[in-house]
Image (tube, rainbow, N blue to C red):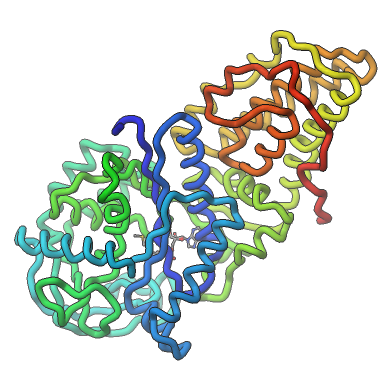
Length: 481
Ligand code: MSP
């Protein structure tokens, strides 16, 4: 089973507010990759969830006059609803307040402690609650957190430390042997250089609040939220034979350090295998500023879908507009432009025009001469390199080829049923390849053209001549810009 499985994760999100485009981005891409790997015939496990402990959640709940559990029970469903609206089909939604997860965290803390990697000491530092991390004086931006631009708090506490310094050489050796563990490549050297400069031991417990998992060896402390959170990836599949380790932890570039350094060190300490790859994507900006709910600059999920009234259109935009790994600027105009131009004019027109002509003229099975114009192997290679934009680019070039073919052969004049068969068969290929990106659009096309979407082995099964092909409603509606 091991070679034929694909275990992919998103970060678990802080449910201190409703989800926004930054959360949607990783989750949609993870869903696309999960679906793609399903189509390749792999056994897929796709995990997402919420990160519910820590000072940030405790403080926000208190400000709203609620206890943390009550506060969370109100917000967590908003994440599940958002993913449903975006056609995200995860295998499991983990909450770090799940009892089964908490007991894994305790077990891991105990193991690490028994292995001599955890000791008691004193900590004093500058803490950003929004990041849930300490900064040093030199990290700050005019005395503020460099990410949230808000004042940091001076905290001093007795704390347990994890012996991160001990793992410096082991980590460097691991990176050397697993060069694609930190991906994309452009981000790995920065991390590796920082590790080479040396690692300080990491404070992994808190006494200043109690909203967390108590340490099994000292229940006056709760676990640092990142120790707790990272182990979600393990606790979700612990009882599922053969899924561990994760094949891909998708994260944003701001949390790469936690996943590329702390995470493998914790796993080494407890003797678990390390994920194959941590991939960091870039950031979307809005009017060239970071999108962030804590600074009031965000786009919610319903608002995102409402731009074109199509979840598939947003999914398409997020995957197509920016190479995965790079930063990008988000604008409603750009979404509408791609929606009207690529989805409606190119894909939508091809489908409705072909179905309309076939309804009148019919089809006659023949060898599809367009097949050698679609670069399936290249598309598969792009997808395995997480170059989603390039894969879509190839699929849409093939859509252009099909539109040009109809234009050139004029089947509405000639009544050539073979040409119509070739185009219909090509539409079948297009919709199978697009299914991971735009599942409900592809499913509409498959119903309309009478074929099924099971897995990529279907790419080699030509369209049945007896398929009942019907003209139906438009796939996309024009949006005024
Ligand atoms: N709870 C931690 C993750 C723990 S994983 C063991 C966390 N949560 S978060 O809710 O603050 O952020 C989740 C993800 O959203 C991060 O990967 C972050 O990079 C991503 N994004 C937040 N804003 C973003 C953009 N504007 N653009 C793209 N992704 C962004 O961190």
